[in-house]
Image (cartoon, rainbow, N blue to C red):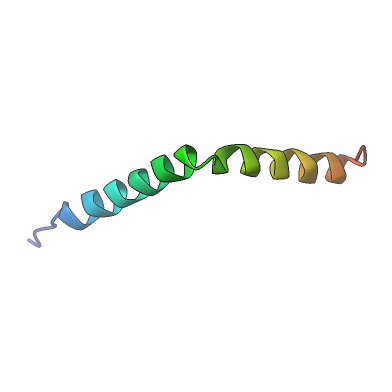
Length: 47
């Protein structure tokens, strides 16, 4: 039976979490939200 290590998955998840936190601290979440709203309104035809 093959033994599977969870270490690579945990490292990848930790890196992803770190990058999300850095993006939030830099204010990127607001910019992404504004772009998402603009795209959504364009698809509906309001904007």
